[in-house]
Length: 636
Image (tube, rainbow, N blue to C red; front, side, top):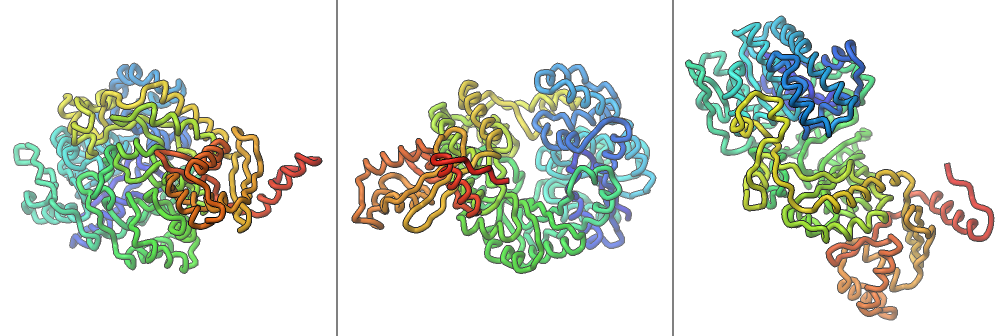
């Protein structure tokens, strides 16, 4: 049996498909007499489109990721799905005119008109390779491209079995796809590395399909049947390492090689150990299975090393929704000792300690995504995040100190939030400009399938409707769109536009001035030297020498309230103790100087330890000479 696995646009071009890499290995190793190949149609598209129009890597990224919540990438291929180059163009223009710049609107419409031609060429290439089964993965904005290709393959070669799977086919979404698109013979819902080989085995032997968990199949009369989903997720021992044969060779032959630096995709765990206890109210990432399970440290380490050796690529994207904390003392120390200069990207919890962040940095993690989302404790409580605003600010500070790039988003629109939750944060944002800003401006939360906000109306969102882009993309009634959609429209909740504007203006300034901003501290034992270069503060160097102030600043390495600070500082330097009112006055002074961040009665200092003594010295000397003589030139 010949199996062809197809990765359509808009799958990211700098990453091989983890899903298809796993499925390829599962077919090759678990299905007797079967072999699988992967067709990198996303890379083929980059070559095809650049021969016909001005198209760049930034354009591809826009349709693959940046436009996800507007659905631009899916609409591009809806013309091929419905065999109409002008498919619902008027509706698209009417809905998107206020959201897209004219150049982006023009390009999107041009892509929409030419997409059927590309799908035709891909379908013919698929048929020419004479597979018995063709499988399409669908995640994010791949749905219409995958459906369009499956449709045309079925028209050209009705004997080829078509299968779809991936995140867009989980749960009810997969059943809806199968019910509405009869050219898709089977949909695999949930984890596919067990169900897909079972399906192939049944097809080879003309066996029954009713026992394959999650599978959608058709009766003799064409009626869609959706088997019950699996009741338990796969154990970690059943999660195979991916086989990325062919991806790097295909990328090297593509114009896309000039756009991106390729990364390996690795997987140590599935599910979320935090979500098992407290499912963040807006998060739908884990789909049908929240249960956290992870590979053994030995298995995960060997997979990482084998992939690096085989493909000679050191950049790796770890797709785990949250880091298995065991790996801090098992996998990561072995990576440090291996001598491989890996560069890793991973998602973590925002309350990790500095020592743990150093371990991440030493192991080659240059990019972490801690899921910060807000700097206000009350809003974070509404999300059920399990961290405070001061802990999130501490993460930004410690990330800067340990050399980690912290990627995060600022979200708003939570039921129960108010302007009073945001105003104190907005006022303190200029003090934070030396720390990593959010990736973009604040965004109102989207209601995602599988999230508590979707599944529990009592949390504040009722009357949900599929986002508008589903209506101009698919020719389906509203109830079927509801079954297919992942993102939903809902009445605005939380803060109003004046507060949103004030927040986003402050965030825009943060992003604009971050590169030039600086705040560090250097602890010399008997004194602490603070060096600042931030546009909102006119001081450049300050020294703390008072024993009580030194004790207080050191305690502020971790979030504390004023009462605890007073008690602990007095225990350290009883001869210099101050009362709580005196401590509060000092904290207010430090907040005014942009040294301390305050939220919900807690305080934390925001000055990373100086990691470049020469720059610290030059900044100090510049301050001295500015006061007493000619200025010292800026360091290069």
